[in-house]
Image (cartoon, rainbow, N blue to C red):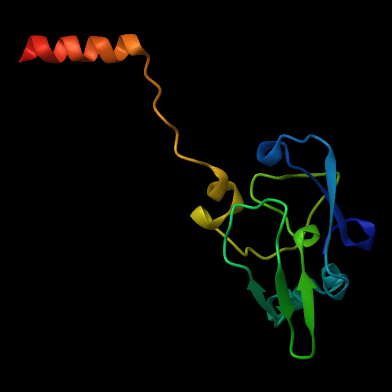
Length: 131
């Protein structure tokens, strides 16, 4: 659920993929209107099944299951860590992945220490002088 009509929200994903264009995300129609019943939010009884954490920013598959029905979730329904909420005052959401399991963290590789040939040569010279 969001502050915008039709439960839309807009995000900027420049930190994730470098794009500065706003992208549209949409809440499930079944969860729209929760802001009218905020006191019932804590008793909202659903289960969310998600795919195994991965680094693919363009794909997400999952299901939101209530007692009566099962609803499909896709990339258009999620807000990723690192995305900035724009032109939207608030959203209600659920954290599916946290910490090292987020797509942002899965995409951040280890930083290789780069050394010049001169650094390597100086290290060898210093080592040989010490020995």
